[in-house]
Image (cartoon, rainbow, N blue to C red; front, side, top):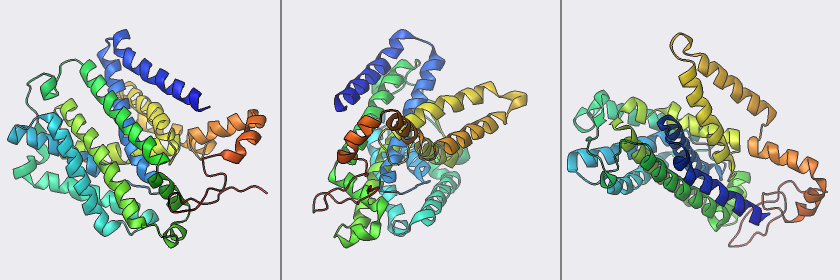
Length: 350
């Protein structure tokens, strides 16, 4: 089964890499760039979801990354590539500032507090005119070239964000299968029990938050260079960069490896198509249709698309289900509890 997964992954990457050679349609490439951006942001958001943590504050890290690369480039003439690294650093620092007062909160209290954090930063960006230029925003210089991360065509942006997305996915997979990933999934099941076993859960969640924020900041920096204009209402938009990644993850399968990717691949082009199709006199109808699609998916597959199709697969392949139930790694069998791997027993069958 693992070999099949590897082959499918390699095939998907190969198809993505060859797509610009097949079509030069700039709108199609733009949609693909947006898909990769949202896949990357959603995968970063999902690192916290490994631990059962629902954040609505990732627009803060996205905006911090956007303003970091723009301010360094426009005011100090620092290369945008270095600006992306600086954006990851500042987003990580922003995560530390968020973690100090809020990380001990749980459930909806933490979720709502992260949303308030976004609003605070948006207001700071609006009223700190001397630094951010307020609501007018910042426009990056028109100079072009690979060294300046600025192009007329979409193809270079496509390959850059594809590479960034693959890095984000690789980091997510590594964390999921690491000691940290086991601990996070155990925290999602029973944090008190994990703490009783000696795991420092505040430090664990802080590490996950900083990594997630840094990755989000990198995509925020790339998006700033992609759209040229950085302003508070867009780059600190909770709807675009907090709620949408969360919806992608929940619809695809929160806390799974494949779920965020599937959710972003499905919902991003749907949202773009609805926005461009229902404009003008029918503006607003796109949100109605989008909401209906969300409700249908959540009702039919409450655990996410990945979990839904997994159940269907097991239902029609009972032999494989019974054969593989003893060595499942998805939390259905008892895992060893020691100093290196701490998890919980879930779904034990009599």
